[in-house]
Image (cartoon, rainbow, N blue to C red; front, side):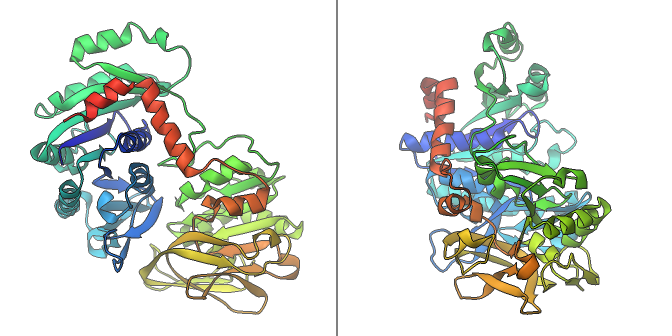
Length: 495
């Protein structure tokens, strides 16, 4: 490794992931041997990748979706070293620890400060392997590097920057969300609280999500530079339709997509793999629903993935959505369950050992498909092509399609009656998706994620062509090239 470029944020949600992705593609377009790295991510949006992309027999593991897309932007095969530590929230006070791609139950039970030494060691090992293989690393921080209460354990922002400085030349950017207000204070305060050994590495500020005339920012940039000695390198405009999923939380989807199909995705508290709906938002009118009233008048209701299925099912019932779902099915509306959503559609859920996050005996599901699910370790991780069989109306447009997809789940789901029609099959021919029959033919449950990222499938459902991932990545590289400037970018990546 000759160069590391760190992207820090003045806050969570400032745009670190998007900027790091754009920088990875810009560097790759220049012919640089570049790869992404994030020591620790906290997200329930994950992808299944090899532990070692260079080994065809490699085991599979999980990384955060942001690093998956950053690797594709850098034109390298995604692998576990790009994100060695992934924390997947299960409740407000508990997260599952995924270490080097695999769930570590013992570390998951430890308090944060007690486990940080082990997590940092694993993260550094992944960093060193990447640094030995690539010329340039684009490193994404987490939250803010100025969380002084966490500084002794902060290996994600401060520790990683120091590892990079030991291996090669280090530069850092600090991105702030100007749309929130207070961006100049965020920039100055972060600079002031940075450790003295890392403050010289800060090469520039970037303001993100700006709406309006950038000349109105004056004299703020000049005053900020006078106070810190650090220049403002660029102002990125608000990008609501950049084509990539948001890293955290329920994003604001476009009010109207390219078709007239109205789709509501249930936004329960432990929503997971939200990123797979970004292409759907470009093809249909998508909303995220937290109440029964928000399900009125829609054509589809989607039950997405869940990090804690029984808890989210209880939340669904508390919101009065079970009655609304049944009424929607009785009217002939479509219901699509994905992974945890599929499991909720069944008759029973059983988790005797707490593999899904909280132990419980058999509990009733929604009863919309004759399925039962039992949870048990280990987690099933697969990334392969899946095949759709012959589906009945109203889902017949999906018949005979083949798509790349991925599975991340603990639940083992089985059909318990012939009223469930097997319609989705993995690469071994095993049924992993079912459609209801008769009056419940509109109910479809699939155990896989990622099907909406297949252009042929979207076209079959909506008759629309959407922007490809490659076009979105190129658009991000063009964005930073225009607003930061090629000369500035070349200087950042220069050795």
